[in-house]
Amino acid sequence: EVQLVESGGGLVQPGGSLRLSCAASGFTFSTYAMTWVRQAPGKGLEWVSAINSGGNYADSVKGRFTISRDNAKNTLYLQMNSLKPEDTAVYYCTKWTTDIGMDYWGKGTLVTVSS
Image (cartoon, rainbow, N blue to C red):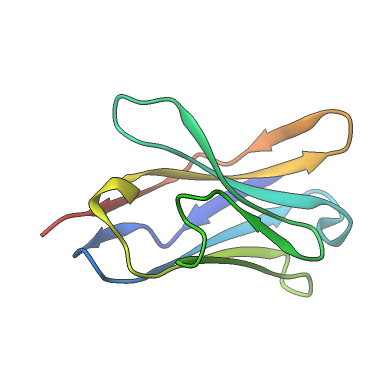
């Protein structure tokens, strides 16, 4: 059974940093691209970043967020720096399968950026 479990969210002041983690199990983690998606309160889903070998980023987070993975630990990360109030959202990690897309999602972790 595929499982994705996010952690690392919380309350942080503007300009601060957080690192999100996503522990994956139930599939061969190293062979799949992974993504981070977020949903701000009252808004739709927004793709944030993806990684296979290299990382790709939405313009809204480029230069501030860094996606990485540790295939030995089956874990996906999102380092978030210079956080802004508009980064407040529930952050989800997803597994990406070619020709299908985001086929499995975690339950999400809440990030709140506020003073």
